[in-house]
Length: 360
Image 1 (cartoon, rainbow, N blue to C red):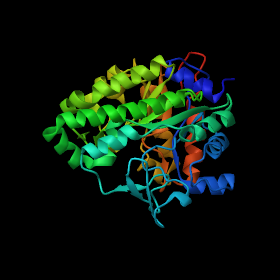
Image 2: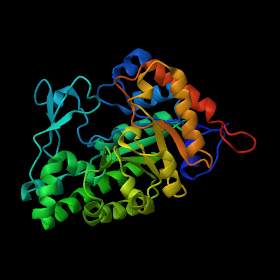
Image 3: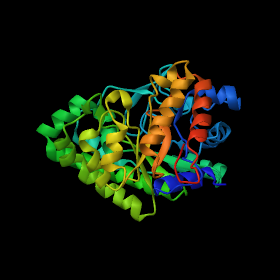
Image 4: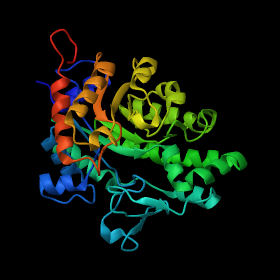
């Protein structure tokens, strides 16, 4: 019998365990109160692990304190519904936004913003929840420690319009900003690796419906050199990297694989991502994490459609073991808790490898 952590490690190495691992992000605060009978509004590591174990998942993502827009304890809020992080990004808490706030008032690229990034330091408090989660998890399930990718961080801080203008009008300033942001998030990742977490979960949303947020050429010129260096540094330190990107990233799939990532999440159905094409293009190098439709199939009552979608994902991408079964986003508001429980149980059932080596 494999542990959840062992299943995840096998999947990241394209090896077959007893079954394919099952994982997803839990973005439903009521699951903590209804199942654990405790509030986890502050995204604490130990409750994250306890809920993941209770649900039967093989891994859990636990957020580091600097994770952009992560809701802090209420005594750190600026007002009844806003808070500001160390970079000066103000976010508003909305009923359906948990565990994140929604960033407001994007910055302009400037020397002042650059210096704010350069002045930021990673502390022990920033990684405490991941350290506690690793202790709580033991060897039973894998723990993924969260960080932001540089593009994702700057997309939130500057907004797409300000960032795009600055890349054209002040490219050298943007290179300095990217370098400074890379230094901070790289250091955070190294500290997370030091906690013993199984992998880094790096949120770096680069897509929207149908295409990338910036042109592939702009991403290659400004952001991929930094990303390649960052991932090389993490891998040399013994880390593993799961890159999360919402949206359609088909035009840059090979670029992402070339960075050295171990896995790609979330291969979003409604953004136009095709699991079969993704598997054919990069599946021999990168483990795929996804891609059952979270906003459609997971939200409706007909559970047979959930089972069919899981089976299709397994048939398409799970034959060599290089798959972690998940939705194409998260267990979020609008997904009934009973569907979450069914999804996990059915994925575990269908993902078992037969004596012939195939999942069924």
